[in-house]
Image 1 (cartoon, rainbow, N blue to C red):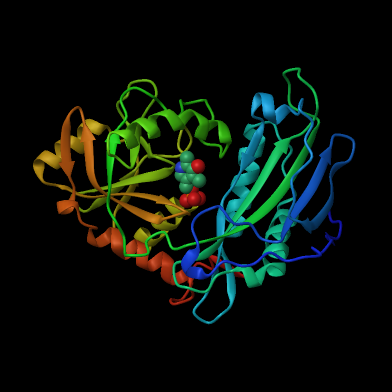
Image 2 (cartoon, protein in one colour; image 1 turned 180 degrees about the vertical axis):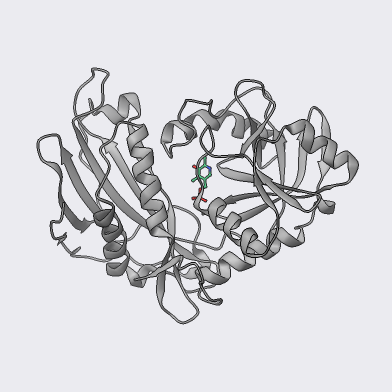
Length: 355
Ligand SMILES: *Cc1c(COP(=O)(O)O)cnc(C)c1O
């Protein structure tokens, strides 16, 4: 689809919140991007419209069988005042991989990239200025065919909405307490774990709620078969540093291919720090903690960039990591990625795309 993008401007503009009032995902900008898909036509009529509710038939497939995917990335206002997206091509590639897994027709990657750049360009005044704030970008595809039979739908809507968000760490990085989840599982090999789809989130809610009730921020998921290997932490990828080596579970099974995960692995390689993608059991993590070699544990994801884990609870035992404080490599990775995002540091891998 090489159609030109139609633009219908909003007649009125919403008041923009102060940077200091921003939270996450509550305020949306004046416009959204929309394209439609029908089997006979393919993806068509890419356009920018005023932000508004989407008409949906109560029989729409997404409402019944969860045929939907999304992605999440950010635009930043650099210290030079310019607006940049962080690794949008990588997010588009992942969105299309998620789509294929959910039997959703992929988008032309060039058009998908253009949808993000065009919409953010039009809404550039909504990109907040304060360091740590950003404009969150949420591309989504839903099956909107009105049909209750079980098969892939024949019509879809792609839309992109934007939300100015506050700093994740207004007072510096804060290590979190995590409970290792032994009862519920997030994903199983052969399932949906590698796709960014709402169903994975629905599956994760109960464990997260129970953990919060017990005073933890989130859970560390174990593999769904043996409850043995570490998988992800909440909705972030997990990394552990043992005896100088960073270890993270490999892609290809249940692990969501995080763009932040990839950025961290690239930086570690640049810095000559050993980083290994392999299965690692929770018993190995416990043994390393006992031996005093469990140096750092952190999650990676677009929302927080890096989330240090200060404490892990497993089978009634509490393992405190680095005295419950943010460990040095965790902090260095955070600073490096944030530095590139806000153009405080050079961008040798060309991760950012100027709008
Ligand atoms: C989105 C997501 C991540 C992190 O991916 P990023 O591209 O780094 O934001 C990790 N795990 C799950 C389950 C996710 O949905």
